[in-house]
Image 1 (cartoon, one colour):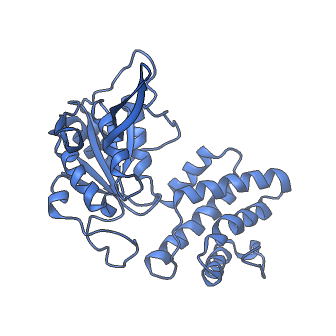
Image 2: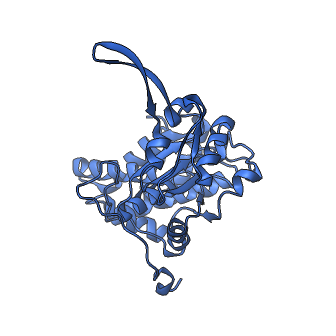
Image 3: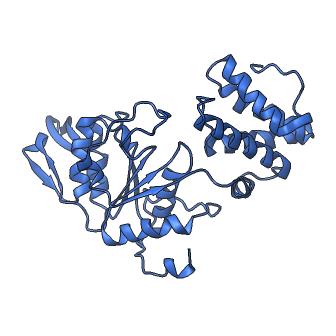
Length: 313
């Protein structure tokens, strides 16, 4: 990736006063230029992009932080059934006006978002509820959404609204059945996304740097141990030896608790062990898996890991 690859204009929205839906910029967040280029190009040229990768590798965060840098309102719309159609599209509700009860329409999150120069993150697109996926097609196409519940009214999108999606797969079986509840995605849905951009966890070096930026007073050795255990777990997951993933969210939680324990115990090794036990080992779905995770931690930390340790303290 050459620096010139990012040398093209991208519009930044400037508001007269802070917009409540524009995310806060996280200065410690690091972008990957190779992945950022097609995403920004698609936003600027009216194409949809799908970000694909394992849980907790930063897909949702990058959509949020792009919105923050571009001054765009950001909306996350899950279509896996977490939200109901009424919450996404809207509906009628009873209100009282001038002392009398009446029925008024309220816009759901999708209609609110598409009226703004927003970035819309359609989350878990490969787990989409069929009814919501059908609705989302209108959103992907950018020609407006027909509200059947409101006499067929059409809501047209803002010319600068941008659609991104996140997923664990590209709408087909992942080959190892790592992701439960994934739906077979129709080619009609896939065709509405010009870019399918692969994401993965950071390299060990970059993840250590990142977590030490985000967690103050985290010893280098502690950060390295946590990241290496995370890496070992991710390999074991892909090999079918574990069922529990270890995302960057867990890395950060473990690092923060380790820093907290270090301040209490004044012993970074004991603090690291305590944090790994509480946050990583105990994530095992059963005693056997917790034992397997503890064994991975022991291999990473060597003699610093207690010889005999109750995996469910």
